[in-house]
Amino acid sequence: MAKKRANGEGNIRKRKDGRWEGRYTAGHDPETGKPIYKNVLGRTQAEAKMKLKAAIEETKSLDITKAGKYTVGAWMDEWFENYAKVKVRPSSHLTYRGYIDNHIKPNIGKIPLEKLTSLELQKLYKKLLEKGRVDRIESKHQAKGLSPKTVQNIHQIIASAMKLAKEQKIIASDPTEGCALPKLEHREMKTLPVEQLASFLREAKDSGVFEMYYVELATGLRRGELLGLKWEDIDLEKGDLRVKRQIARINGEIVEAPLKTKTAYRTLPLAEDTIAVLKQQKKKVGNSSWVFPSPTGGPISPDSVLHMLHRVLKRAGLPRVRFHDLRHTFATLALQNGVDIKTVSGMLGHFSAGFTLDTYAHVTTAAQKEAAKALGKVLTAAL
Image (cartoon, rainbow, N blue to C red; front, side):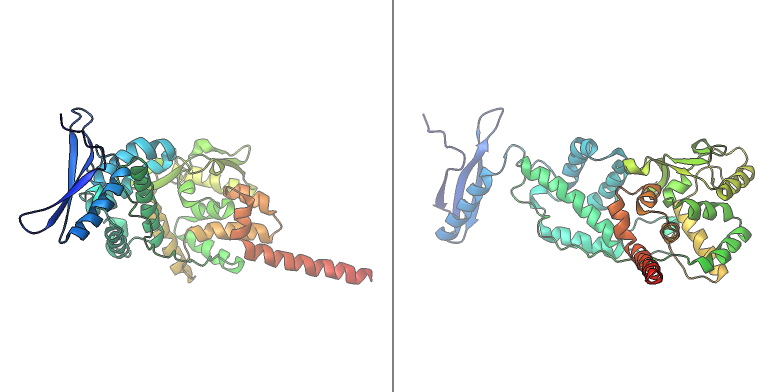
């Protein structure tokens, strides 16, 4: 009876074509028990020996019954269904699915999982930076490449999938290790100075969008949160507003989505002027359940709101800012007018006051200098 060769054992022979072949047992079929043989080739006996040794070592870290079974696309689907859906919050599921279906599978999905290299990933990231944007009407005037942040996000989910593949012994090495990632763009925070607010709101009123931007400046909501407001979330008698959902564009669709963090679910007090503006808006929209509905009655596209903002700023003769900068304007004005950092952090829905402090360090530093001057005057007077 022939001796059953153990996993990892091998031998070397010279072939008729002059090359040397190293043959080894990579494992055994779990159903039949038959050995699974693999081979390596070398131009010399020494080269074949070296390759055979490396292949045997690699085999020790692989489950040969699983290795070679997946393409990159098939493994990303497997990872998403059985890992990401369990570990990642539901609000991120559509985003992850969009990254996989729109960017990963069309570009590298057919590559056998074990043959994916860091070079292939670098080519993918370069392509996405240059022309990775999914075509849609709202993006026709935007750059065709994805942002460095989005490319980093795509890399992170590929890295998570590759880590799992390595843990499951499907691949011997992780191709995402050592990849060079694009540097994140540093976007300077801008705000609308107090002296520009009157011009901005006047033009917003003339353009028919005064209520939306007034409420934004009065609450500091994120764009998606503002667009996600329904009348059921607002108590005009009690004077408060509950943030319960957001509107987002995912895979080209405008969808209602849950908020990303627990701290984003919050209740904000409303000033009397803001209540008056909301009452005016309620009369304006009639029976719509949305506070700021689109002309068709559903929620407004986040892209449309940004284009609208830029038109208002242009007509008012003011410099262009992002929608997020209106949120910065709210936070800056609150801090400059004596509202403490913890209260501002809670109103913004930040996960910690420390994050708020880091974000608005320039504002708090200026306030501290003013406080030091004021205290100095008190002490000077006392002397």
